[in-house]
Image 1 (cartoon, helix red, strand yellow):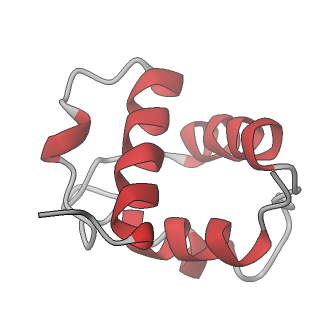
Image 2: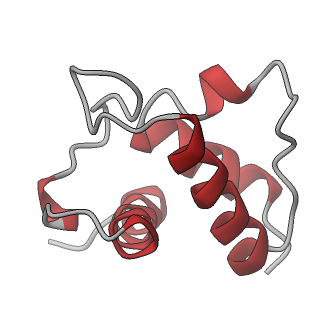
Length: 91
């Protein structure tokens, strides 16, 4: 069964997050609707999000602004981040 383009991007972004942050989890274990912030998800903090934003900027060719009001929604889950990347990527 082939993954949809968004599912493929979600897997790619999960692997990117694990690699960028040296997480001790398998990228495949991150579910699309898992929270990225806080105790009930990956447990990322604001420093982690800055790291991810930097890698996203380099890999996908657009900037995620640190002071954006949309960041909480963008980084709410793997799916929301992948959806945002799909809509804004230039590479």
